[in-house]
Length: 183
Image 1 (cartoon, rainbow, N blue to C red):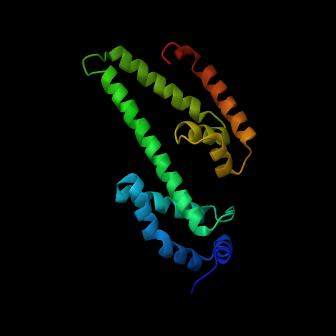
Image 2 (image 1 turned 180 degrees about the horizontal axis):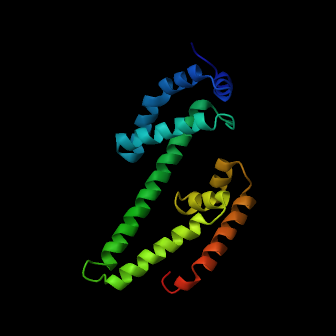
Image 3 (image 1 turned 90 degrees about the vertical axis):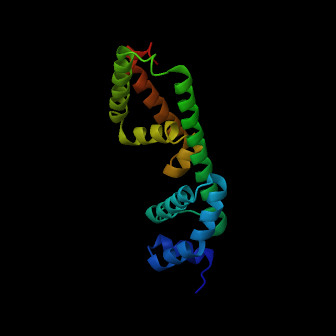
């Protein structure tokens, strides 16, 4: 049976698993192929697509699709692929920087200990933030999302994202003031 986009969206919102499963079956393979063109890895592509469907189901009560369902799915996959590529490129950039600036001979135990202590202090600072503030900070700094993307994902205003980021950064400056020369 074929459903209109609005019937599918309404069905998912009320938790109709049959409609959701049909949507999954209708689009999964083609979305994986689409994602694979970006990521050049079918495993990564499947992970992205599964993540999209997981989030649709998880946030089904909040879902607000203004375009066609097909367009929404393809745009979501494309954005998640591009995000994954950005994160991967950032990882490579850091890895190359690290390799070019530090070889095994140049790391002394004192520097290694300082780095470990700083890393622990950063983790403590992050964990001491309020939940929403920490979530926004992680989405910005670890996931690489822009403020408007965070605001859309969390259904909050951009000003709220900005305020929480300011709060988090101030918290980090205070919490890590003893490590200012190492940062």
